[in-house]
Length: 258
Image (cartoon, rainbow, N blue to C red; front, side):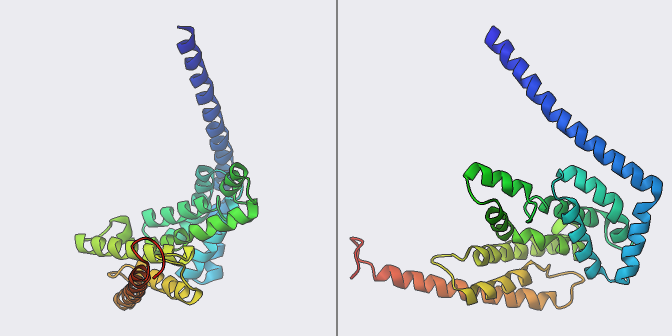
């Protein structure tokens, strides 16, 4: 009846608004990309960055990540990715990086601009909904999403996390990455069975990063890093589990202290 027709019109109206936003974003990105390609700015920027860094991969990745975050401030993820892929993609791929790893690296950091202060649009929107401080919310979002700042570098150095490689390589990489992510989550939140002290949080951060490194790949001493990180993580969990059981044993069945 009329109610169904009204709902249908409302759906069409909302869909049109969304499509208009996408169209405006894509059009603006297309204009920027067209100007970059026509002027040769993308090639010149890639060449300048490569010469400035001297062909060293890690400093180049740090610079590219910073540029992605700066360009992405206040823009949509898709538009930022299109721009940075045009500007910075050649600078990364010409160093022998797999194209899929290079573009995922760019996409990740273009997306991370949404929660990286000082212009973190997604965090500001969440702060408005929650009635919290925008800047404090931005730094909290950055802290909780800290793993996302590390994983793209692993994509570049060893694409086994992208399911590229043998079954053993991919399985080991995914397993150690999950364990490392869990340790980093404990370190950044500061809690497992009970609040975690600052010293243990620093240790867990180091152990988590060591575990995220794929055990089979071009990174030197990756196996030793995995073993060391896993050992630190197991020691920490054993200590915390023992303390939890000791605390539970001191509590009477009725819930009061003995």
